Length: 302
Ligand code: 3AM
Image (cartoon, rainbow, N blue to C red; front, side, top):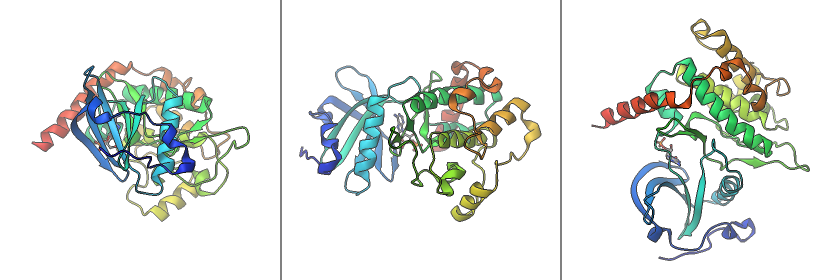
């Protein structure tokens, strides 16, 4: 198999990847999904039988280099129980193969689409994600693409943040960012108003995930991208469609995440002390929900 240093010379990414032949080390079992970047497949490490997910990112697109370097650096240097664990990475022809732990419960997006979540379950997912965000923010990393698709689940109820391609490492010299990146429905108002922003953009995005868990979709889903941008930047805190159906704690939790003023928006550390979060069920309570979502999806396939 041909192997080449596909990364641009300045990116330093060639030095980030391992030597060796991943096709000899891993046996591929199935393709899990496809995206603009390439594909993700499930594989086992042949020697140990350990399950892994391999994200194969095409390096033919100009923008891929930077995304890959970001993703590898963040995953490699920042390990935590609420982040999808990095295993290894390789260059294979014109692709970067990012080997990571396999999450056998699929994404939170699947669970939201297929089931209705109870408040205790929403709180459990919130606590786990906020622990992941608190860890990232303590290392001055902003994820910048928090949404239900990027929150992966294990059948044991584990909840982990994934997809670090858009993450930004802040430094003493560069403690804020300005570039408008992310996925429109989940992006914080300060990003659209071109203000310098910090880690609190992830908290806004997580508030939108909270609304997804309650209502099944982010606010303004059927609107055009331009209208969504206007509504987020000047529409204030998005409103629940049927607020009376939710507890006062849940409504208050969402308000604290979706505070339009970045300074008044709560941090991950503060939100972990919110009564809605401290009343969460154990993560094992998520297993039946994940199994049900997988069952519904399997039934539709056959
Ligand atoms: O296309 P769906 O949503 O079914 O959840 C991710 C998505 O699945 C999944 O790969 C698809 C394309 O991104 N995925 C990504 N990383 C994964 C991992 N570490 C993963 N599935 C399991 N483990």
